[in-house]
Amino acid sequence: MIETLFRDGKAFSIFPYRVIFMPARLQTDKYPVQAGFSVSSRKFPHAVDRNRIKRLGREAYRLQKQPFYDALRQNGLQLAVFFVYTDKKIADFDTLHRKFSVILEKLTREAGRKD
Image: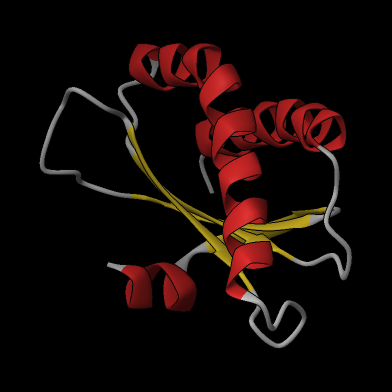
């Protein structure tokens, strides 16, 4: 699934994330999104830093995902999404929280488009 996502998925960037997504047939109808988070070990050689960034990103996503889920369910869509952190510094939670609201709005618009 991840290989297909990176090969065939659409992408956009909203600093500090690169977002890769594609429509998917998930194994459950309970959740309309399967999400993944990634941080470069080249930019952050210490695992503790990578884990912190992923944890902050997952929490920012968790707090704001419900309207996104509702919009996808209304349109009968399921998505596979991957968030790749691109900054060279660890962002604070407030910054990530604001960025995720923008990311999820754009993702909702992009997912609903027919290309």
